[in-house]
Image (cartoon, rainbow, N blue to C red; front, side, top):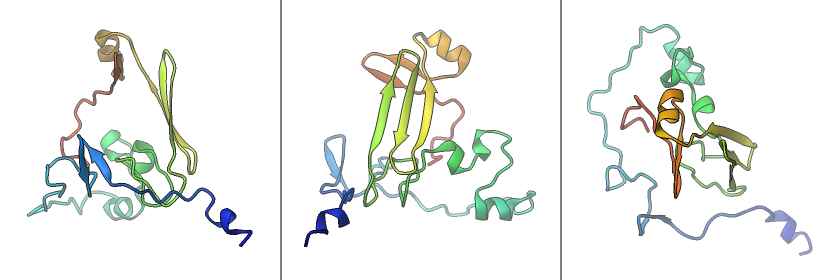
Length: 152
């Protein structure tokens, strides 16, 4: 009996569904609206490309551009099934910390302490010149150029 609190320390399985635009959802996918990613009828793979099999199996890529980066470089990776995109919850250690200074925003995921530090700028010109996020009241706008709409 006395060790019960220790067994459940840090466990937060969640008690609600996702609330997206005022609607409770069973899926974090918001586009398409039904929450189901459409099946690709004829997916095309370049099996002849150098290191295709290794990249597919390990996520290790050629780093020739952001599209080739594995999840560990592009996303905040937490413990369990919550590797992004999508800040998904797991059984425990579901805490994300956001810290904003005048020049940066830092996002930290509690489990494994993975962090991303994002520079921000005051004007659209600074953001355009430096290709970085722009801070506008009342929130932070991060614009990604050249990213496929259905990249998730």
